Length: 209
Image (spheres, rainbow, N blue to C red):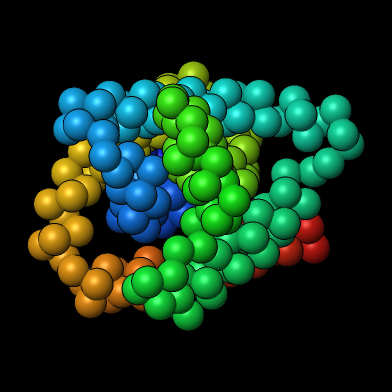
């Protein structure tokens, strides 16, 4: 049982550090400005559902995609580690008023769309390249059906956690303020940076065995 719990916790913590729902709050509030609380809740619910489906599909089908292109899982882990490290550096060096989760063009396009739950909320804001790389790298042929079920459960729990954060984002923004968000961004940046280093080291060790 401890091994099973380790899979659940490791998957959840890895996804939380990359998805960073607290970092997504400013963009979510910007894209939903002027919407009613019910409409905002509906968009958050759909976006998180799409996020769970996207990540679950990439987890289950990711290995097949790698095989099709002739890539090894270690190649993806190194590339994903570099991407995650870059995201960590950006979080560590970002300012409270800056938002680098998605580009300004994507934000402006989202403001003009009626339904933003799939794009840009679910993708690329929540299920971006970093989180997709993480879930693909979590799949190995040695996983049992129970292990895969626990991984998908962790993805679903991450979706639920993200939904709660986005749902209460107006109150959380007021409660935490710019200073709180800046401090949280630094902490998340360090975790993301460490995760990226871990991905690269693990892949290199496996390659040179």
